[in-house]
Amino acid sequence: MKGKSGHKLIYLFCLMLCFLGISSYTKTQASSADIVINSDKTDYYPGDNVDIYIDIEADILPGDFEGCLTFPSDILEYVSGPDIVVEGEGEIIISDQPASVPNRNTRRYSLRFKALKPGSADICFEDVPEIYEYEEGYLMSVSVNELKITVIGETATPTPTPTPSPKPTSTPAAEPSQVPDDDEPEKQDEGTVKVDPDKKKISAVSENDVVRIFSDVGYIVDTEKQDIEIPEGYERTSMVIDGIRIPVYTSDNPEDYMLIPIKTADGTVLYSYDRTEKTLQRYKDNSATVVKHIMTDSIEALELANSYEKSLNVMTLIIAILAGVAMSLLIILIRVALKHRGDDPDSMY
Image 1 (spheres, one colour):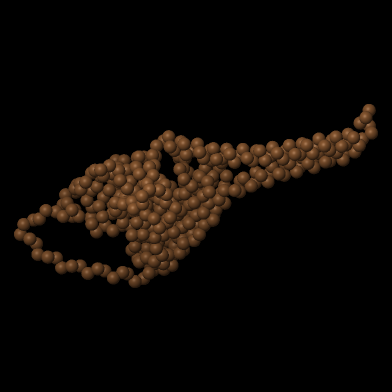
Image 2 (cartoon, rainbow, N blue to C red):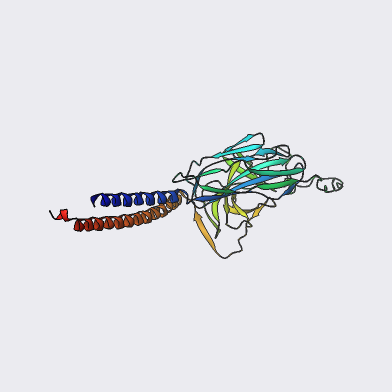
């Protein structure tokens, strides 16, 4: 009888270990991330800039990211991207290790290529990229797509050049969109400078800690954390233009515009950035509801505390369940021991 009781105790102890092992395995496999490779369009002409975006959306805060993106180097030529990118022959190695706590579960990397000649280009990761949880460091389950773009052989029909009109006898004042003759850009307003009106696509430069983006004119980006009003549903994140990280506000709707904080004479205001047309204009909010986002260190600390609190609640629930199971097993062990004591005649002596 004593041997059978010992076997039961060992059996119950093994069951408890298996339960704990399954719980731990479930925890490590719970988090996942989706990686989407996309572009503004699928058809390009030779000489066009091809902007490729790598969007990451995870169920928890993503941490370190590593992946090798491949592309046909005879059709596309790599031009620019963030500092975390290393270019090889027909491949782009991305190795991102965030230095600060992420403030959202999404991330975007922007890469610019140039179309060289007609052909079909498959852009994909060589192997499944690796993404780790920021807090726990576990490897996340990843799903990723493949992007196919086409470089068309025929070029777009050029726009006819208008016949220049006769020069007037007197030199008129420069129009607002004209570029001054001197090398120093003429200031149009506080926070803006005049640039070439023929520049169609948005670009960015950084000089003396001042970030400027260019569309029809030049704008100074407010890279500091400011107390500004943004539409409901938008959250602060960032995008990379010409290798320069720009603070932006995005929503969950991919059709919405990105909002960029721009310095003007009236203070910091929001400009809407059309990701398809590559245009920038002052944002006009048509909704009646706006919320105020105060992006300060204290708010970020509060968000981090809330994240830790959610994780703590989950762990507390798991511990409570395990404690209940352990208590049930302990009760069973006691009952088995008592039953064995009652069945054993020698226990009376």
